[in-house]
Length: 178
Image (cartoon, rainbow, N blue to C red; front, side, top):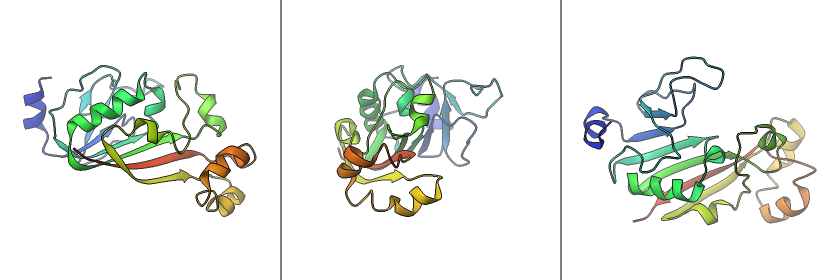
């Protein structure tokens, strides 16, 4: 699809990358195909491989971008964030969720190419300011109860406690600054 057609076709300024089966109404939903990993049909607006650059969107278009459990599957996370900055307006919000390196599910999926700590975003944030970074704590009640303490001293947690109390993931909120 030509960039011009996408610009005219979508009224939404919100982009959901790697939507899978979690289609969001009122958003532009992108995925690599129209089937999930199990072969089930999924609803998408744009089919595009996020490892192929440039993305089929115009410069400075989106006001909000959401990626949930996608970045760890891609070849070049730094280039992905750089591309997100290109397609976002100044002041746009980018929310990225990834598995935390300490959680067993991070290594369970053989399609994961990268493993992230809470501070990995500092290397990736090309053209963005980190406005929030937090852990997706856990589905374990005990870890959830003590998990709030991890965000007080995250470097201490990641150095000494991650093997005892693994959190599920990282949640990063970025603001594009051009």
